[in-house]
Structures are given as structure tokens and as C-alpha cells.
Length: 142
Image 1 (cartoon, rainbow, N blue to C red):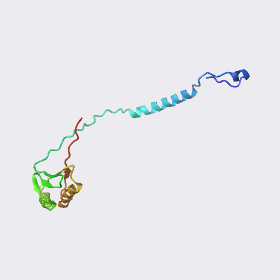
Image 2 (cartoon, rainbow, N blue to C red):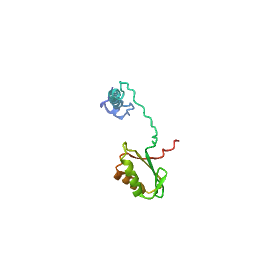
Image 3 (tube, helix red, strand yellow):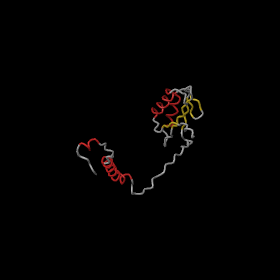
Image 4 (cartoon, rainbow, N blue to C red):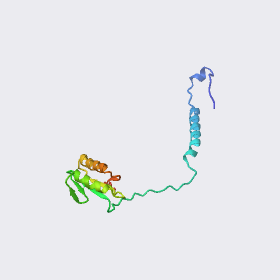
């Protein structure tokens, strides 16, 4: 590592064509130290077999209640058409006292109003249903 200091008039007129590598070496040493410190943290030494996740679709048991709501807001208990929300409330109230309590599966049409689905959920909540779930279509696989 040499450095030219002063030297007279002749040295001041010459162009210094040498590359100063001192800053480059300093940066590389700092990066080397950072990598040496962080690599042991990133690599785990304990081998662990992680559990694998499998998504299984739920099957509807015969005692589960499937309520469908079409795009017009009409309520269907399994395949039976119910005239209004009060009739649904009466039926769900009878089912909510059974032990074990059945699950309520709601199938709402994508084009139906949220209000119709909300009325069914509210009636189920008032009747004391503990397990209410929504059935949806899984996305298409590419």
C-alpha cells in the first residue's frame, strides 16, 4: 500500500493511474465478517421431522342439517321448501335441543343477498345452535 505525498512539481503534473483498492478491501472484510456471523444462525443443526398437512373435505353426516338459500332468498331445509324465516326458526329450535346437537351447514347461492343468509344465521343463533358452518365450492385447480 503505497501513497504518493507531495514530491515536487514534476510529480504534481503526472496523472495517477493507480486504482485505490483500500475501500474495496474494507467493504469486503466487513461483508465477510457479517456472513460468518449470520450463517450459523440461519442453518439449524437439529433435524426435526415436521408434520405434513392433508386437507380432507368434510362429509355431511345424516344428522347434520343442510340449509340452502337460493338467489331469491328462499330457504330450503335439506330438500323441503320453508315459507319464511319463522318456519325455519321453529324447526331449528327443535333440533337445537338434541344431544349431541347437530351441525348446521348453510349453502348460500353466490348471487343471493347477504340479508337472506344473515336472517338464517341470526335465527340459528337465537335458537341456540353452537355449530354453524358455510359450504363453499373449492377453487378450480389449474
